[in-house]
Length: 492
Image 1 (spheres, one colour):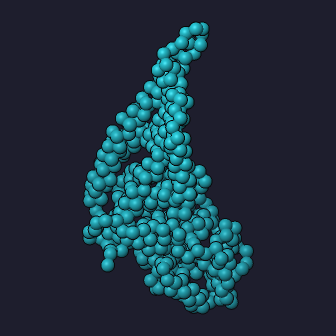
Image 2: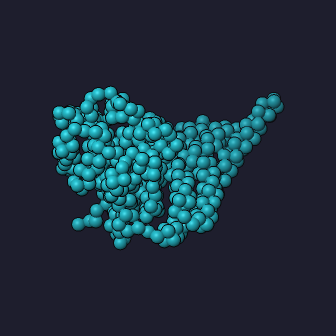
Image 3: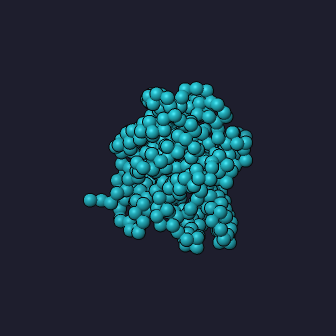
């Protein structure tokens, strides 16, 4: 049996509720029933997300932990400021719960207190697949109250499950929009395993390595095929043009000649149709993006970051992938924390040094190819201009009859074929994106070299996290642009 290489699918149930509820035992019982029902759903692991205010927030957090759900916290303000809402004995209970959270995020560092509560509630909705609310149905009694958070969830069409704080009745809203599983992650998980085996002492990291390897293997296999097929269409058009020009210039009337030209054009059309209809390019970009996100997760494995890496990226359907990688990394880091020096040295050598060497190699390959294609364009264009100029000059000399080979080759055949060849050289530069790639490789070498020097000097986790974030954003920016093009454009 092959080793697992499929990432788990995580969904998030966010929570909002009143600080004061009359029947705490009844609310806790209904919360347990609802969360237990979610946990029992096959194929998905549910995470709980909430603040930790007094009242129903505490009931939700304790229930989630008791049921074995992963629990993440959104604090509306820093803990020292948030503590003002609690008595000393209450705060001791809050701290014990916070110690069990998989992640603690702070929202509203510089906002007014009530604004911070509203921001925290909206952030909970933004990062949830389903909002669970304990609400009496009445308007909010203060800014950031339960009613405002429910109203925001309704506004953006988030599925909502409301527990009436008086009657304990449960009703649903927008549940037709609750999607179980994720098609992007399902696509990645269905892909066959890559050749070879992976050994890693950390089981979560070994799983991510196998997942990365299969995506990287498929992306590497499909990328060149797409460009090769596009190149074939260009060359077939050049060949068809050359055959037509030869027939005109040399008076060729072979029966097979028009059929060969027709086959070239039909072949180019078929290849273009295949490229238009086939999913190779889109799958290639999706696999490359998934592989690079996974590579970034592996490179930052063990970083005890307080914020999600790339949390502000527009993931366009790939949030479940990022969420799965992020959760696996955090759980592994909690169980097997890396030391500062260990993580820093590993990041310098296996990430920054490897990427610097990769971009240097790519630049060494791309620059000569770009130079040759540019030279081909320049030569064919200049020669075509010269031959066309010579032909134009002969029209000014009445009675002059050029040799037949000059007439056929220089005045008839090459003036037709050479401009097409020049266009083909430009097309190949565009197909292989050489102008952008050369500039990108040079830019990345400069940015990564600066990041390496900074990372080698820093001495604290906070400084190192900032360097890592800058480096990883630079490495992923381009592949996110590819993903946006293929996700929202019909031109592929």
